[in-house]
Length: 112
Length: 113
Image (cartoon, rainbow over all chains, first blue to last red; front, side):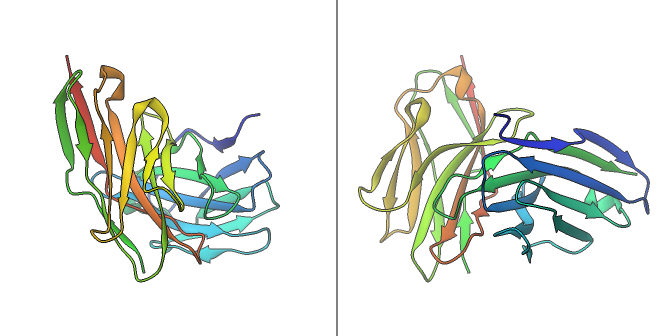
């Protein structure tokens, strides 16, 4: 039982490059989330998916797109990376709002 | 909309001393409240949560928190901290009618020997 897995763990991009962050969960959870963590700002929600086939914007969606590929997988895409997107990205999943969110180990992204 | 304020960005404390990490929230509807801990270079894990019922909630590693509706607070406490409690602690809130969890900016607890 791996919980929530994220790939890659580290990534360096040049401004303007694109990439996709992958997330998968094996807990049969309906809801999945993408957050970014920046010093002094806590975690901010980028996008979330309350169920397979649905996605909604969070607090900071600009510059990102998501895909809920199936119940297990939720990917985050940066179409044209900018230095302001340098951050640590966390994926999480939960059964519903009353339940614990389980977090992946994070992806550290540096955009030069 | 909901919001969370963690009043202290850093809390230094000596080992075996008590500690309180403060959290206040704002919401026009009923909420669920959570405390998460993040150890260095790791993801977040749940310490405890308040959904309903008793306002005193006990969590893992000897932590507890008290929900105070009149003061809109959910402060985290531990009577005697260990070096291993050094970490960042996040308070979070979600409304009953949404899946979105709103996090505070975090409190870095540093325990000194």
